Image (cartoon, each protein chain N blue to C red):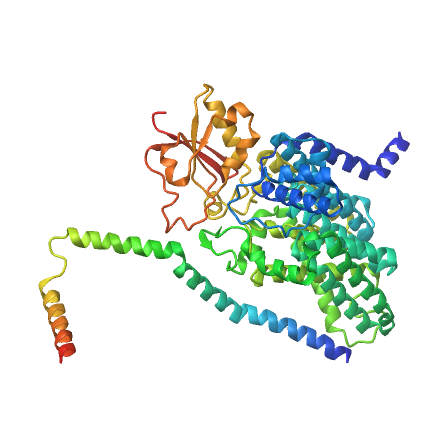
Length: 85
Length: 547
């Protein structure tokens, strides 16, 4: 009985330790990534970056090249046609 | 002559503690002010007011209510859930001695913090002499604890973690006494002090848990110990009874309030912590957080001896575990009381270190919440010295002593070098660049030094506009200046800091500064001064150009 209890305690401790060093570690890393990505500062940073890029685009003489503008135009026309039919 | 030296040797512990007390008395006013202090002072008056109303002490109730209203302006949500073992006595002293000047109030609190620590070190001495039966070793252990720079610095201003350290030590001493004799007196003392430790910091819960675990090991080794069950139960009764009795927060609903407190613990403290150059949510720091902080901010001597002591002790008990099926006359893990005490200390350390590293404990800046682990660091160190004494010859012992003395002197030199900022100590493993990735003056000890500097730098009576370029309520420190100086200071919000004459920063931030420009400074300011100690930047002052 005594040996069984000691073994149980050791196995329980090793299991907890193993769990934290494997799943626990990965879980914390993931939570950390999510926390960093969804943090207010990160969202503000992305918003600011987006605005800056928009400003750059506005100031450019030509933002979309001819080939891309034709492609986008055709694509939008196609969607419009499909929606109307 | 011989009689005098004999007498000196007999009384050397009194001399040691007397000198330590005098040093504390001489320097306690040197220290800066910890941002938590106002928070804790309010807690003291809140509960004193509650208690005086409860017991119908009208005069005290009136005074405490007035004092309570002077403690406002918190950037963090204030909580009434803290234990009262330091705060209420501090509030009572403030009233009894009519201390009304803010500077004197905080100096009194610093001295009181030192007194608690002083008592803690006496009990640390008692623990070591109880275990190792050597006056020299015990005093050496006390010296190691006292001159651990972060502990030394905090023992004059950290009225939470140092108080817990003191009660943690006293509880362990009482635990040792219980192991020697399971009589009612020892059990009551252990129950009382472990409950006080719990109300100071929830880590105190480790005492009933580990006590139960040790009892389990006892009964597994010797069935006769089952008859101690009543006494063990009595300990739990005393523990719970006294926990409720001395913690008024629990009075209105012990279980619910305790659970509420457990759930709300994560609401306090900083929004993020800087660790190794990366900003983290304090609940999601890497597993290496606690061990890294211990390795970089503990004196190398303590670290080396701790590792050796810990390894020897772990190996010893691992052998016992492997031979647990061998029939013994005594217990499975210990053959005498000293081995039982060592086993208890090892179990406590493993549980606490494991919890601190792997559980989602919200770490406040640095590892200050875990400063009580210094107890284990020194205990294992002294164990190692004691162990080496019996294993090495006299010649080697001499070399070992010389090395120890050299390291002790090095630590003492560091205390002088850092004074009064020992709380920000980093050891020789770290470089200036590496330290930049960690928080340094996170409790804002340098705030008052900055204000005094600014006032002296402008000896005319003009108003001085002050901006704060870090997450730090500097305005709280203004009340510590003489009134004429205080009136000259105008504190600007972060948004208006560009209009300031001087800008202060201790580089503690509530946002990730790599993503947020909240703490960017325009080119209108130039760095006028900075305080750098041993590669660690404590604070910096910027002055508006052309001022």
